[in-house]
Image (tube, rainbow, N blue to C red; front, top):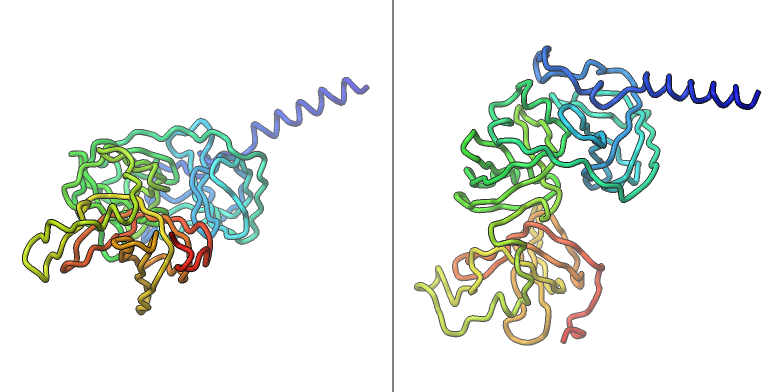
Length: 336
């Protein structure tokens, strides 16, 4: 009897596995473009589904993307929910309604549930694509990559970041938009990038790649050098051009660097806070940070990766990525 019960249980599990909904089932639609804001909407739109996958990217507050472990076209999806503490690499099962938000398929938080089975799993490999695969707005070709981890290679920055932080690259096959929702980075026009990895989203009629952190940006010179602020600032021999345009410019002007320091002062502006950081009490050890996203407090310990520029003679760092290690970590008198 026990053996029969065990065999029946196995059969039930097998039947359930055959009937389970996959991310592919939710996403696949290459024939019906939809109307209005729609772009190849999910055949499951309006239904509540249960799907499983590996979390490939996480936004803050916790919203995330999951992808079937084997990866591939139509096998990734965005989960719009703030209540689940999901981390990259988590194996999860999500039950939620399927919704279309201005053309992007998502699992919507209303009535959603999430089970985290395990953590620190390997991620699906990114799919290598051409920038042209995501060009030109709504298309069945581009729609197949929505929610999926992809990579473009040997690209050149075609257009600088706009007022929303979005910029464009081209590998010769067409322009592709890079979104700054997970990583803020603003390279100059004409700059060559070895590769960019990220999850694909659809917004305002355009497909876009969302790099998750600087490890998704393979730059020609490798990772940016880690420097002291003294290294960035020290220049007592080259005054540069005529003031006020330059005044002893940084030897790292136009370079991407990483520095760590304590927030020493803040300029309060409407909508953003620029600030200064310092890493010791010696000369040349403070620098101005140009940013509209961080809103730090004086005393915060922070690491910043960004580009060095000279603004009418003032050396400043434009933030690409940052990490706050501790709030009000040290007073300036404790710096050495």
